Length: 335
Image 1 (spheres, rainbow, N blue to C red):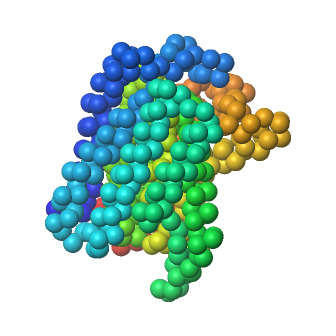
Image 2: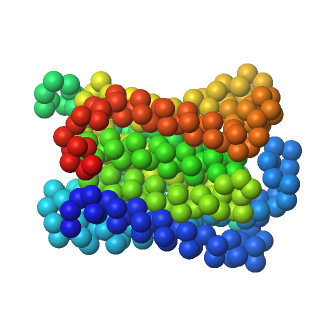
């Protein structure tokens, strides 16, 4: 099977799985009462199911299990590390998805949820997902980071990404759409630098997000919940670490930062805003970028979401051009 066909298979499998799984998960959530209640900072007028992230997870998992069989019987996976990355990401993703399910159903104190994220991040680092070394531009030399810098920096990256993506999930269809847009550009970057494993994961994530989006776009029938937002944040954090190993130091950390600049900047602003107000960092408010568009600038939910889609597209394009641009031979071979 050719590489473009493998990518297409992953995307379609994830899309179909998530599209048909979402209504069943919605029925289950309604039956057991796993609903997102209305409130002052909520954008919906009635309680709605909130464990839709399970559908995105199932889409990604199904796509990876279908495609890995083909990949292992070809030369697409160049070493045992590629296979380890596959299963390591699935294992860590399953753990953080279960943390989200627990929070959506039972409720978790912010401190306990934060500790759970740390545990999942540490397990991922044990699997080999950490910054480690970064390629120096102009050659094959690498800049090695000592463990006392490498592992704390990786932990901050995981925690920052998971919580940034979690904070972004505030409007109907916002996170699922942004995840698909950012995922497409990160896929192009991963493909450009020859990281088949990361590219396959991103195809699966994009397919799963798109399969869920019709049920999540305004007016939403179901929400991702922490189940989905933590899982998506974890996937982005992990594939970003995989991609950095293939990119020059001048852009290796900038590429994912640019592609996902909106949720990361919004999270940083939220932390500063709450600290200045003397409130807990975990205390929810209406100061997020998407809230400002609705409550302060008077945009409708759909208008705000589409505007943020546009911003995400521009940021993704900037990250893509920063990492090498459309003239790269690997990209040319896919189109």
